[in-house]
Amino acid sequence: MFATSGLTAKETIMSDNSTQQGVAGHGAFFQDTNLSANEAEAATAWVRNHVDRRTVDLGERMDDIRDHMWELEKEGEIIVHRITDDHKAVEVDTLFGWKKRVPTNNLWHHKSCGQCGNIPGYPTSLMWFMNHLGVDYLDETDQTSCTAWNYHGSGIGNVESLAAVFLRNFHQAYVSGKQHGFENGHFFPLVHCGTSFGNYKEIRKYLIESAELREKVKKILGKLGRLVDGKIVIPEEVVHYSEWLHVMRHRIASEMQVVDMSNIRVTVHAACHYYKMVQEDAVYDNAVLGGNRTAVGTSVAQALGAQVIDYSTWYDCCGFGFRHIISEREFTRSFSMNRKIKVAREEAKADVMIGIDTGCITTLDKNQWIGKAHDMNYSMPIIADVQLAALACGADPFKIVQLQWHASPCEDLVEKMGISWDKAKADFQEYLKQVEQGNVEYLYNPELATNQNINMQKASA
Image 1 (tube, helix red, strand yellow):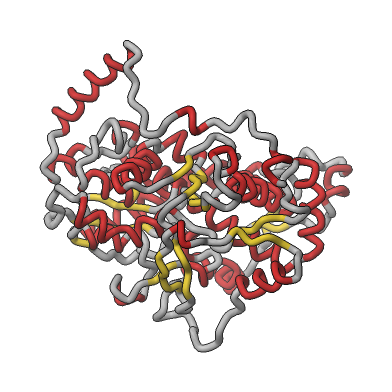
Image 2 (image 1 turned 90 degrees about the vertical axis):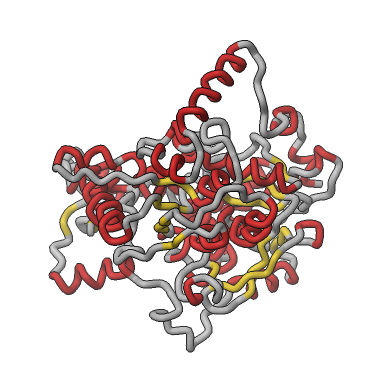
């Protein structure tokens, strides 16, 4: 744990010691807090918190921020991007038994910077499913990163900037149908990244609770042409892609599955930003692990008929941690190996670990090589739930699932599923020759993805 030395930010910058190195090279204002053992335990206990129905006190109803959201809309303060019949929503339960509506159609893809840069088979598998299931969606280029990586990783962001980015992106989702001849709100945002998902849920709470924050960001968004009738737009629900996969799992298994998964041992890593952050919004299902753990990820593996194997460090973080992945990377690597990979291999004898978040999969996938330096030769495929589902439904391991981007070995998993790795690789190499000749295949019409000529002021009218 780190804390400031007592100087204000301005005093720190003005100080002669401003170039002094603090803990982990973060600057003089990051110094050891010298907490006692008990204080340190209390400060970090939430990391090990078992967020489930067995351990969370559900007796007292928490405040549902959505109630206040509807009040603000009624008072004319905001516009709520509503889920309509055209979105074909499926109702699910959250941790406290509240109802959440997950739209399954007319979706606006809020992509992940880490997925597109590190794990491209993640979003392509999702869009591959939507293509086959006849789901209407918009995968346009007019979005930005959520900037939460910067906020959590460096601490130089602030709530105003996070809120402005949140509202800017979701305004674009709201007006995106205009250029295609639809009314505002036609496409509903689907967030790919767990970090974005957790960040946006926090920011939505801050915006609804703070009139001061709303006024600050309205000034910014007004300059960007990102208001509608002078109001900010907030989505009815913040929806994660794994929730879409959760509600579509039975249809996927019944209509598309071609691989028998009964001999595949699966472990699950649920992202902290999904179910520990704004925990009341995470989806739980009584048909999945007795409703005691968050359903997403696990529910898909179960629907496909795989063996879902428990392990003792299920609740642990992947080790990513944002700041220490930058400044104390060896801690991240040690944590991911010792607390996750090693345990899943020894206890569960898992064939694969599936995740639901960009940072988690990147951390667990890319850091296994370091174990060899310490005679910890534990290796295991780490892929997203949607990638595993795509493999089970016959998606190409290279063209669609893109396992060649993964650092962890996936060959044995693919072979155990009855898919020839060598043939798939050879077919992909032939495909690349076709690409070199200009014969490119697209999952999505690239002309629909661009949104360069639209006038935001006109679209907001």
